[in-house]
Length: 303
Image (cartoon, rainbow, N blue to C red; front, side, top):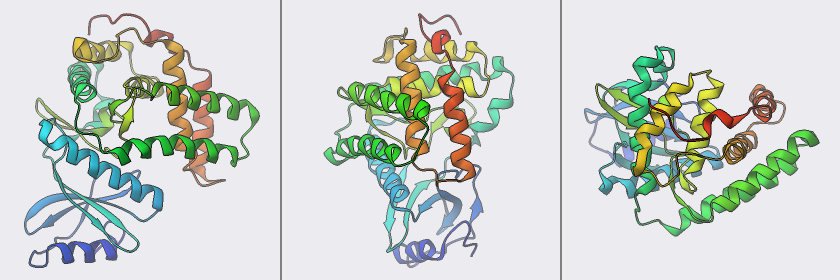
């Protein structure tokens, strides 16, 4: 068994949960940047196993499991939750493997080819933002705790004042908007889609929470800007979001900017001090401070 893909404790948890099933050899997924993830067969059934041993990332998987469980009756295009397994040191999330190809490779395709996918993603997010599953109170408290935890962590990171001040201001904006929450994904984009013909599945819900829907739109706009994608894709997304979504299609440029910075603050506080990841996200913070989100504000044009 490959411990890099499926740690020994996670394999033991699978054997304990499915004592009569044969656990297949794990295979790598195309993602797994936030957690270890692997394709595995359990009794011949293809599943995805995401696992984590760090407390905050274990909490992410628990959150993803709760959100997927709430969304399951809504018949939305999300992975089917199978099990959440807890060990002494590891947490493992099992979902049914979704057939199709990872959407992250679509970033390299011609914009005209992927515009319909952005339009479809807009429709999916609109449906998510307007759905009202019975929210478990601990998820809402968890999101509030995340805001507080990020702010406290920033104070201890010895960041330069020219970074710390705008990041704190961004977190304040995010907290105020979250006072009237809807379910949000947290990291929408091609990189979190599985594509099978015309069918899309939105995966990786560990950053989900009850927040303002603009949180998702701001991070999608940031991702488009970071990847230097043409504005037509944003318009295609907004066209799909349409009148179904709860957010006006003329989002304020300052709010988008603040919410993108708040997301970066949450990522920064997870980076080990002095690590290459921290250095990269500090670079992206400075880059984001210079961004003008004006082209993402105003009424939507055609796709």
